[in-house]
Image: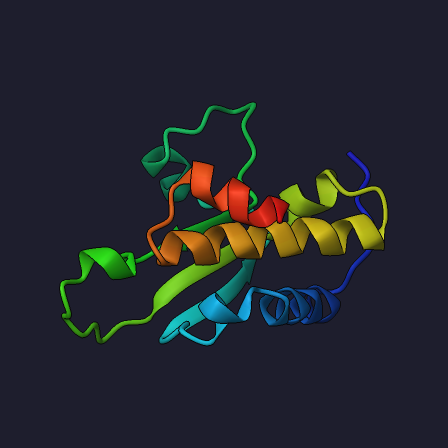
Length: 126
């Protein structure tokens, strides 16, 4: 499969751009969240999510969503990982890649806030 040639540095800039475009009601309340770039999901991540060989993963939120914390303070940061190769594989150009990254960042940030897929889609469509 042919991928665009995008450096990790440029991809990370696109992630930062996407975080900046997250609705401020959410972005301003993000705390102790690390954004990480990986080429592909690990075998452990794929197994944990029960992904088949024909399924792609573009991003992953790992942590305890805010509504489930009951006021407890976590020491380790929550982690949002974006997977470079799967995102590149569905993007025909840099503009489409940027939008796919924006959508994935929003999706994973929304999981941090405990939103379900229906609500994530509703808010992303507005």
